[in-house]
Image (tube, rainbow, N blue to C red; front, side, top):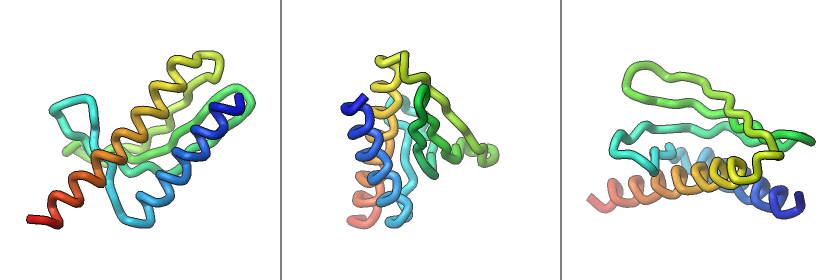
Length: 99
């Protein structure tokens, strides 16, 4: 649990920094680059809840993604996905600023 707690804290800090920097996260695992605006991550006794907006070209959609802590592989995957999506958003913003 301590490892998960430290990872959740790190992701939470990354989400807050991206919000401050006005960075939209970008889908890291697909050529269809949906944009995301992560709002917050919440750690409870049995689950992790990630709340974010998805911008897929149609209309914004509020997503509340809940992952059970008992599914350790899923927890690792979702935390990694959030980190990679935000990092891709930063890379895209840097690329656009250099153009």
